[in-house]
Picture 1 (cartoon, helix red, strand yellow):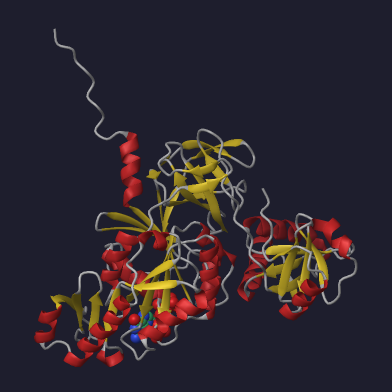
Picture 2 (cartoon, rainbow, N blue to C red; picture 1 turned 90 degrees about the horizontal axis):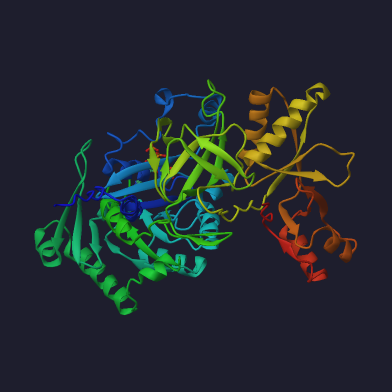
Length: 542
Ligand code: G4P
């Protein structure tokens, strides 16, 4: 008698999950406005076949689809405030690009997005090198030891000496660099790059107007005899490469993944040169979704139970539905539509019935998602930044810290009859993480103090209070630029007695916060009371 055994399923769920994690790469671009983030994003998407033509990311003027009041503000200011997630497939990988808002007046959203990123691409303008916003965002990456890949852009224009640019990164950021490719010439005479590992020359053939530029991959001697590159430019690039090789050290992938060594690439996003070599090497070297720290230790992405955390909330993306979307970074297991998950903070069960993937301003309902992906959940007010969702044994991810505000203003409500809406709006916007709220220690002064990292954040709060809550407000700037949370709380503060040149306020959790006009006043306090513990970021509330 023959026994019939059940055939194994085509793909076991574990194998499915392992395969999905292995192919995923997730990253955010950090840069200063104008370095070319939008242009690079467009070119990357072209490789993924995700868009048919460049220009779809930042449609201008009439082309821009206005889908909400919110977008209206963006349109008025001609900037992109909302950060979205772009997912595309390329060369066997699934890539999640977390788009960080690119305006100079950036907000805490940019920082929070980095909490959901496994890798960062630091984009520099070859003529400018390191710029202020890049430095700030780099510090956030460093706090989390995120691997950083550097792309030196605009090589088709006159720029600074490549060695000098690397030296600046090493000296000022304390980040070692390992050029994966090296430029041949620059500006008008930018001819291409030499791949350091394969020693192949990737030549850049400028196109006639309106046509895609081309690249040609040659061996060094072929390139030398091709007539496509001036011998002196090739010789100079090879000499510099020898200098770099002579300085020693191989490409140490572990150091890259610890965030201590940055692979560097040169190119020109606008002419689409160097983008493909960058993308190929990035996929090879970038960190795949890694285990994350939680209350119960490291959580492996391959663990079968789904878990993730909320890193961003966005209200009224679509005014027709008055919706609120919570963006969740998937950390472990497979997420499935209609799943009922646990909400760690409240202990409630929640059925996730309409998960969405957002592509630019378009949305589609997702059936499933894997570690490294981001999903948008409709959020009727139950989610807060940093909340953990999970299935199986309880897990709670480390909270996302609030960042040190640098701009402060009283928010006045001139119309007492609108007080209820004013209070509701302020509370909801605080919960959403749109802005930090502080209060005077004098209880009779009930108006909130808005505390932000960028001026735009304050304008957004005012705009939203007016359009979403029907309250017109007035801002009165406060002349402070530095905030510090007192580590030991009120008792520690009382122990030091009177403090000069600073204002004491309290945050929404009644914790003391000191406001200073400048760093000089802060340093004075450090000198007077060296034992007083101060923190530039708000302690995480769990
Ligand atoms: P951002 O998102 O980082 O703010 O920068 P964005 O891509 O909008 O680029 C800023 C400007 O730099 C744009 O010019 C863009 O065309 C240009 N640019 C980007 N990459 C390169 C490059 O590799 N080479 C050169 N030469 N220019 C580059 P714009 O004149 O401000 O806008 P547009 O009218 O060209 O769109």
